[in-house]
Image (cartoon, rainbow, N blue to C red; front, top):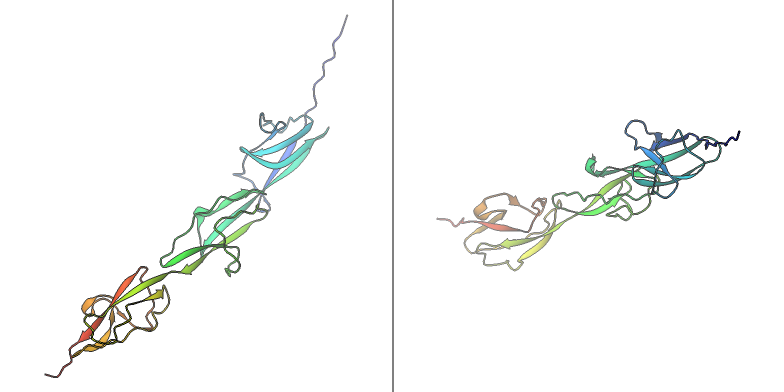
Length: 231
């Protein structure tokens, strides 16, 4: 009577621990799977893994981590890090990202702010260093970025409303959230110049050299005259 030997490959357990910002990631951690052929087929049952070297995938992403099974159970670690983005004291939660270690972040959307131009992201709250608009370096730690702004400049045009003297300055450039600075002081025969206003005939808001620019566009200031000729 002949007998045929039957061999069954030993299987081992692979434990993959997923960490987020250095702490073990519990609920919500991406599922992992193994591949020995660069993603053509996968091992999803990590309790029964044969000998060999495997790349660890998180979802459909290659983590870059390799685990080797050689006659015993094996373990590996996958790390993710959080990237947060702030505009002054408020987090822009729509830009928050969880990024696999050594991968690159997605380009965060640029925030908007009235009267300012977005200069980029700084990696410190003091806004020092050169700002960037995208995070190109591989991520290896939890990071926080802060929006840096440059105050916009606008053209102010002077409408002298019939002035007869000292009316040669036609316009000037002002900076948002800064004072208007020196303004022309025109003259008009038979009238007294009272002030510059944001609308004609002394309507709107008065504007002086100390007034802070709060109009986020090119605008016109109007001379307001008052007839103070004695009757």
